[in-house]
Image (cartoon, rainbow, N blue to C red; front, side):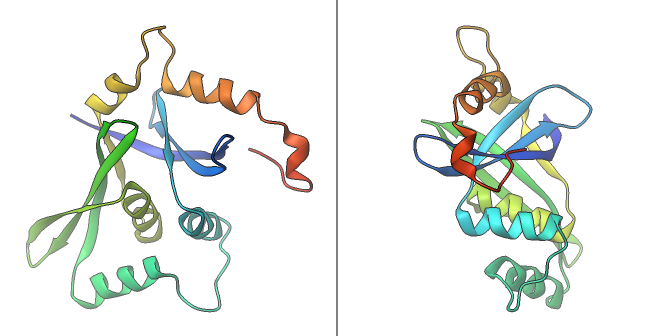
Length: 159
């Protein structure tokens, strides 16, 4: 079963300084933290703040190519997690059919944001992320973020 999610916030994984996108279940309490690259985090943040770049990012070029070929992004899906690595795909609508393309989760999320397409997470991903101690991924993430020294952010605010 696919669970609709939305971007609820950003975080940084403190040990590797990896940007994370927090996807929260729409109308629910579950969430997952998906690592993204710095360029993807910038593209998502700029889009949400309505800031235009001087030149298009790669994700913008992909969006333009899909649209110029008569297609649209139907949805992005975070499909699985194995060994702390997420898998994902995008589903394109073109020529009255759907095409599934495997991709990195960060690309799927970023393209969905840019195209205004829905993002989904398979139910099994939430189950796999539940730990033996009963804490959800969101609770573990909250604990990791709580341990971050926010004075290192200077003028920036962690939301």
